[in-house]
Length: 127
Image 1: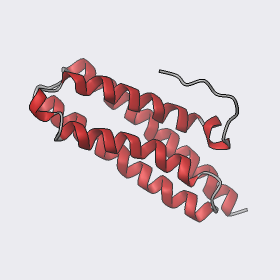
Image 2: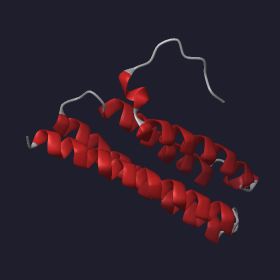
Image 3: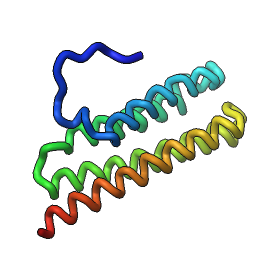
Image 4: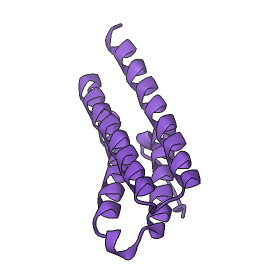
């Protein structure tokens, strides 16, 4: 669900931030496939990790470059954590292979976007 926006914070223009929100939506939809007894275990961890991606992108934007890079390291860790969660869900047969591959593809894209943004910031720092 999209929210009406009257004005924007600067980080909201980042494609990385927008894609991270899309991944959160994906995860919330995905965990509805989990068994009820996993809704407070793996699903909770999975949601927190997905949310962490967007929150750390937002929090690091506009900070000093070294601090922004630190937040992007956390983003990278959260992406990996989401991959671990989706792998566990697949191995436990909570999700099918199609959903698992879709999750991997989205996480790969987020990982590449994070690395690109980090490279951009490093280049800016070293000028």
